[in-house]
Amino acid sequence: MKSIKGILFIILIMSSSALLWSFATPIEPIQSVNRLSHIIGGMAITGFFLVFLLATRMKMFERWFHGLENVYFYHKSLAIFSLVLVVIHGQLQDLVPHWDKVQRTSLSEFAKELGSLGQYGFIALIVIALFAKFLKYEHWRIFHRLMLIPYTFGIYHAYFSSRYDLLQPTPLGIFTAITTTIGFMSALYMLTMYQDMFFKYTGNITGIKKMSSNVIELELTLERSLPFRHGQFIFIKIMQDGIEKAPHPFSISGGDGKKLFVTIKAVGDFTKKVYDSVQLNTPITLDGPYGHLNFENGTQKQIWIAGGIGITPFLSYLQSQPLDRNIELFYTYHGQNNAIYKDFLQEYAITNQQFKVNFIDTTQMDRLSFENFSVPPQTSIFMCGPEKMLKHFAKQLKTHNKDINVDFEAFKFK
Image 1 (cartoon, helix red, strand yellow):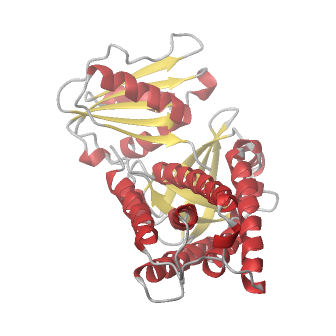
Image 2: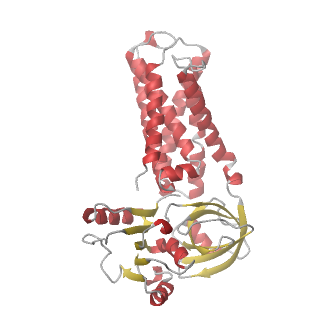
Image 3: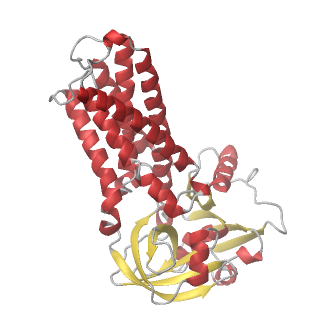
């Protein structure tokens, strides 16, 4: 499903910025290159406002963009786009004739220097963010939070070195005041208040089960029930010495709200530490739930596709209630060590005639393919697993089944 509302929201805000800067009246007439430089600089500040706003994980944006992973995609894309605008703005300013530049005062000179520092800061931090997979998550979060500094420099630069009076209650002045204030407060909120305000569900780890040599299932008992929909995920902070306190997302693999189960595969520093050393009765806090998979809204015929640990959101549904629809599951994994819950799925298929499961072990069989797969009419398709795999499957399915709708939750964000 397309992120239509979210895309329209971005287009509306960015086009409003461009139009307001284009039709605003400068303090005194300026040359065309200088005007263009101001328009692009103003759009850059607006772009970073959206970057910080999307980082707040508001449930509204998850709905508008059809999934938190899509919110993060546009968050990242806007950051890169805004950085490009900042660089173009700086290059255009170098082309402005000396006589058309703002009369230099100590205030405007300082604002100009801060603008340059902000540009270099954005370049450095965004480049670091693009190489997130090479950093420990906690280090990545620290660098990410530093984005507030160049953003603050950019706001100061816009207000005090511009040829437009942004302090006046003009349409441009009001728009700039609203967006920069919301952008700054969003960044400040994520930096100082998010951890306390959103992680309101507390509890303890009351069960630990090692499913294989690299997969562990945790039972979480909460002080108050967390309402969730089967197929959703949560962010968890584990309050144990020696384990990183930063929140990490995991799918809910079962539970009733008061008691939840999450299944974790040890693939990185954090998850390996959890697998090796997590202890019973360790305090935890949760934020969520998130996720747009909704099996209840699907048709009576459904096809499920799971890759590796991506089986977990489907388990939550299967373990919750008697099956009342026809479901065929394709479960692909690399080696028997990664075939978690295989026994449960086999037994479930025996006792539920409406459920069929296909196991694809890529160490012994060809990789799963839907290149010539025909989807029956009125069939919903749900997928969960690595992003690259899911996009490949979605492309194959839509090639021969033009009108189908494919919903998926991809693993691609911190």
